[in-house]
Length: 316
Image (cartoon, rainbow, N blue to C red; front, side, top):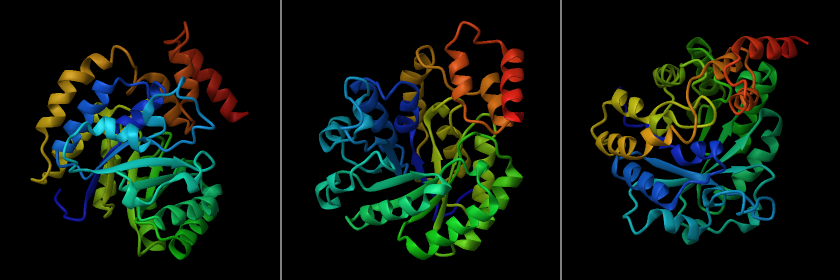
């Protein structure tokens, strides 16, 4: 699928860091950056811009904070070809501490928000864009959003924000392709001047298929991660996405090389990807935290007990 408007964003380091408090080695961070930067991918998201008064560097790795010094260390002297992105959470960043784009290596900041916080998201995104950055709002857990409230939020984004794109985020890996199609059409209809993005989770092994459906519906900002690494069931695998797009500007070889050298063994240290507990939370449209807790317990493979316990809680 070739369309010149399509932009691919790799969020390997940012979403993968949710599984280990961003405690990756310097070698790993630089190697991933070098590989993605060499692949022709449009954006690489390194982590979060989190307030150090709220989070401690003794508990979290450098990509939780993404200071200019942190980013320089990751870039490690490479010529930067991919644009650098970071994510910001409402209430976890001080907008006044964000430097102007002219003083930063960062090109884009993505504001993570739930529908109920859309006022705050628009305000934060507009402040950041006023400093010269590209901006998006990533509207999370959309599978839980009420239709009317979602419509109102989208209309408000269209009228009040200056963002470059709004992301459809399937946080719980609960959506099917028909629902992605419906939502993408809704987003395009209610926000005709905005680009739309897709960030899919793989609880039901549908992240790649749902991303393809989004592309069919003219969604142009696409998220992926190397080997699908990410919180719980992970994300749309970047290597699959690049292979599907058939765009000569993307080079799959650097991704395959880093996958072989760093990610195969990483699976022995950090668990991510499709497993039955994450499938269960996906089909029940629940946050995967219960599945993550189970996988760290002595009863990590008690699928029936897990299903019965959370199904009963969900129906209560």
